[in-house]
Length: 148
Ligand code: HEC
Image (cartoon, rainbow, N blue to C red):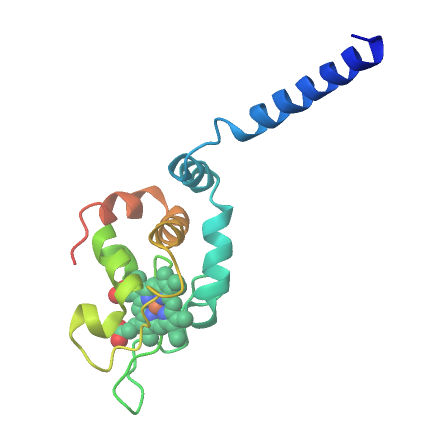
């Protein structure tokens, strides 16, 4: 073998090794979500993109949210401590975001849309985690015993 051939074989071997190393051991989706969840920016971004238009940039809800509209529907409530999002347990918050208010509560005028066709289950969990992460500890503790 000529030195030139040996050099080419070495280069080829290194290229194959690099391709092998770059494709193996990619983390599972689960661990990626867990990491994003811990640092929370993904949930905040998804909230801004999907929820803020009604529930407000700062989770403040729509004005006069406790007063019914002319058609019997209600404005979007705040998700901060002044609202009642924290009265509800995780299962309820996830269900209402996934399937919508009318489907979950049985009240036809409930205007909360369902996001099952726009957001994945893990994206919905990230958004709820983001909302919960803005609450003080005592409210977080109360929400653990929240109802449906
Ligand atoms: C088109 C406006 C609109 C958008 C967009 C919207 N919501 Fe709502 N949401 C509402 C309204 C209106 C209600 C209250 C319905 C009622 O009580 O009659 C509500 C209620 C809720 C509730 C129940 C709160 C409680 O205390 O009972 C949750 C949780 C919620 N929304 C989460 C979300 C999340 C998360 C997003 C984004 C993924 C979102 N909403 C996007 C309008 C909206």
